[in-house]
Length: 408
Ligand SMILES: *Cc1c(COP(=O)(O)O)cnc(C)c1O
Image (cartoon, rainbow, N blue to C red; front, side, top):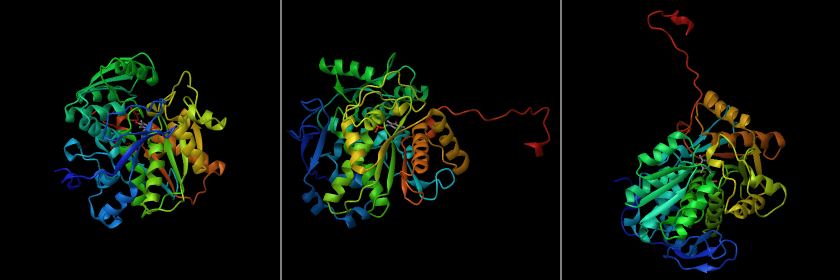
């Protein structure tokens, strides 16, 4: 048994879903994509009832995995859940490369090696609960891998489309876990357009970022977990590598729900949406005072997970960043590479490039005075560094002509 949090009947406190732009209500327990206005749907709960059913003490007595939060999650039937062991991820200090108040939430420890597992375990459970048998998704790699793993386990067929230059290991991992994978000569939004076309033809259900409502609910557990780990307070700043922005939007939602439960106060971290200079649509819109972000042309960066030229939840990201008093920050490729290397070489923590981008952005924020050195800051490393190509820093020796070993 993976976790006792999955035993017994569950109660869900979902009251309805709501369009994130118009507020229009949608019924729970029905299959939904985007709202009529073409925007993401947000799941709403009867938090008063949830608060009566779940005390902090009850929660703290449970094993620390994702399912301890079940009263704040949408899944109704335990049978719908396919779990691969969604553990609580650690907060790892990086005192040398970051600073004495810098913690990395290392999401690379999750199943399939990335935090996409949080969103997809939930979205797949809901798809299974609502009778979906075929799913398609555009991906830069990690989301497709998590979808493949959970959908295969749930007996749901999957078609995954990725840009042809997606890291090789991701493409192969997706296929290895049972999805049909196609490489497309375009970027993720162009893969998404193909998925949307097939969905309109009734061929499959569209699992693009934020185009179904439950990935946000799974990723919300990052914010819930963080508050619990810090003893029911939040850090001063959060640095989040932002592609589609699901994680940032969902943490912001988590903090609101925790405040409504009376478990935290009204103080919020400054939210920093981190992007690469080669693909920074949210940063550009933020700096220009816009609410929506235009598509970024010729997007390129080593940090594949944040190479997202156009995000359907752009206004939700920008709104959360503004309300929090944070910023959208772009970092250069050499800063990303240097930060990733520093964390590994100085603190022994191998970040993914997207995680390296958050360290680079933290350094920039510190230099610019947007955060102080004694402000507690949490950086999100959203995948294991092991999934990415690494520089070869080895040398060879000839066993038949050994050099003096003291020179090694
Ligand atoms: C998907 C992904 C991101 C971006 O996440 P969003 O919540 O979609 O913005 C960042 N880093 C990694 C490693 C990812 O896989």
